[in-house]
Length: 428
Image 1 (tube, rainbow, N blue to C red):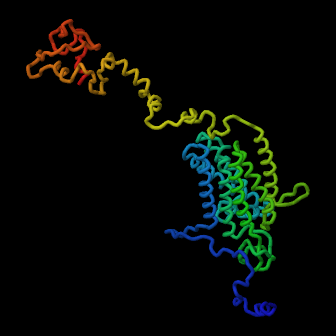
Image 2: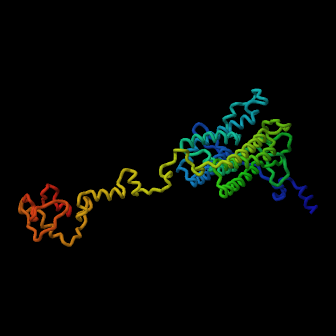
Image 3: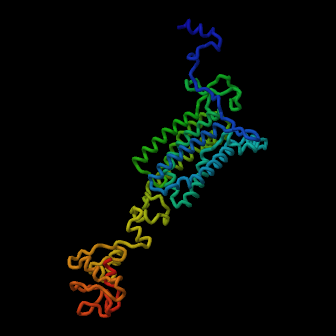
C-alpha cells in the first residue's frame, strides 16, 4: 500500500486517477446565461433563478395550506403580489446596511459604490429585512382581501422556510457566503480568481459549504413545522413564531462559521457579526410572543376572515348549491312556501281540480270527461252565440255561478253569470 501511494505521488497531477482526488463539492462552472437582444444581451443569473424557484415552490405550498384553512379562492395571489416586492426590497436594504463597506466604504467614508445597491443580481438579500417588509406588504394584501394577517402567516411559514432552502443555492452559484477552511470530504471548492476568494489562503483550500448547511436545516424545519402543525393546529400566528425560533436557532451557528466581510457589533463584551446578534434577539422575541399567544384563547380563532368580512354563506354555516330553493328565495324568487301560497291563492281553480296557469294537467274527475268539456266549448262552425247542448248536467264549479237550470243566464255558452272567466279556460 505504501508503494502505491509513493507511485501516485510521482505521477504528474493531470495523470492522478480521479478517484484518488479528495472528495469535495466542486465550484460551479455555470452562473447563468445571456439572452440576445437587438441592443445587446440580457444576463439571467443563476442566483436570480434560485430565488425565483424558491418563491414559486414556497407559494405552491402556501396556497395548498391556505386553501385548506377555508380562505377565499385566489386570495393567496392577491396577498403575494404585495408581499413579494416588499420582501425583496426589504431584504436588499437589510443586506446593504448590514454589509455597508462595498456601498458606502469602510467606516462610511464615502469610498463605496452606491450604484451597486440596486444590482441585486450580484447577490445579497437579508432575510430579516425581507420578513419585516414582506410582512408589511402581506398586511396590505390581507386587508384588501378581508383576511387575517396572522392566519396567513401561519399558512405561509413552512412555505417561507422552503423558499429559503431553495433560494440559498444562489450563494453556491455566486461562490459567496461560505465558511472557514475545512478538510471534510464535503468541503467546497472556490475559484481562486473569484473576487470572493479570501486572501491569504492557498488556491486549493476547501471551505465549509454554509449554503448547503442552511438549505438542509431549512428542509428539516419544513418537515418539522408541518408535523407540529398537524399535531397541535397552531393559530393566531404561533406557527410563524415557531418558524422564527427554528430558523434563528440554526442561523446562529451557521452565521458564526462564515468568513466574509460583515458588520460586527460588540455587546456584553462579545464582538461578533450583526446577523448573529439579530438572530439571538429574534429568537428571544419569538419565544416570548409564542408563549404569550399560547395563553390567549380568543373566540373564532379558526376563522381566516377579518371581523365583518366573512361571506354570508360562510357565516351561516351552510353550502348553497346553485338553483336551490334557498338561493331562489334569497334572490327574490319563489320559495317552497311561496309556491304553495301562490297555488292556493288562485281562486278555486286548484280546489276544483283545475290546474294553475302554466301547469296544464288532465282532469282526473270521473264525472267530467274530456268529451263533456268539449261539448261546452263554443261551436265556431255554427257561428257566435250557438253552442252544443250538453247531454248531462255538469256539476257546478266553485270558480263561478250558473243559473238554476244549469244553463248560462246570458244565453252565451260557457259564460258565468257574474262575469268571471270561462269555465273551460281551466281545463284546456
